Structure formats: structure tokens, C-alpha cells
View 1 (cartoon, rainbow, N blue to C red):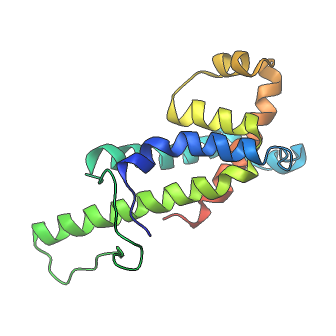
View 2: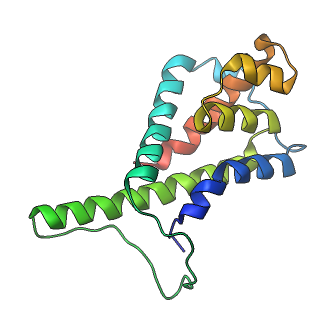
View 3: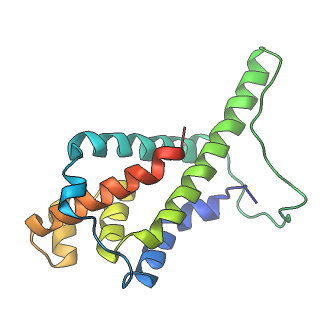
Length: 166
């Protein structure tokens, strides 16, 4: 079912953390030679744009709280209206943004098992909570230098996951 509810939106950070913790023994940081191919500052800005769009969609559009509809009885698809009146365009934009938010949600849920537990903490604390790297390194009980490897690996993994989003 591709209906994103507000409950799902609220639970997303917890899902990311729990899924990465469940598969942590199989997940690894990317090798240094892989993430060094990317300008991390630039890549982080690109990743941040996706999170900012998600936050905008999350607060600007009305999402239902819970659906008791089966996936076979209800499906949302992109709206392509032949009309160019303001109402049709607004409805189309609303539906398209909600579909994008669902795709973003699915993208992060699918990314979660690929993240180490430390990467998921970095991702959630940075992009959902806006916590500083200093506080994150204290939370993880590691030095800020060690956090840089976690950060770079997380950002590159997230950037790869977002490649299918429009």
C-alpha cells in the first residue's frame, strides 16, 4: 500500500534505528577509498535538500492518521490532470508531493538495514533532530575524528539510496 500515514511519519526515525540495530552485525562502514571519491560537504547538502523537502511535505500536507484499507482496495497514483485550472494543479501537486513523501519513506526504510547502528544514530540525530556532531560523538562515546568516518559513510550510503527519488 502506498499510503503514508502521519503515524508512519512519526515512527520513521524509530524504524531506522531499530532496523539498523537488528542488522548491525552484518552492516559495515564504507571503505575510505569509496567515500573519499565524494565531496562530503556537497553531498551532505544534497541529502539535506531531500530531508528538507520531506519536512516541508510532512507539515504542509494533510496525512491520515491510520488507514484500515487493504492495499488491494485503494491505491494512489500520480495525478496528471488535463486541466490547467488552479484547483486541478493544486490537487495534482498535493497528491504528487504525498507520493514523493511515501517514496522517500520507503527509501529510508530500505536503507536502514544497510546502515550500522552508529550510522543510523548519526542519520536520525543529524537530519531528523538537528543535533550537533559534538553531541552525537558524546552520545556514541567516540571522538569527533572517529565520527567523521561514520558521517562520511552514512552520507554516501544515503545519497546512493536517494538516487531513485525525483
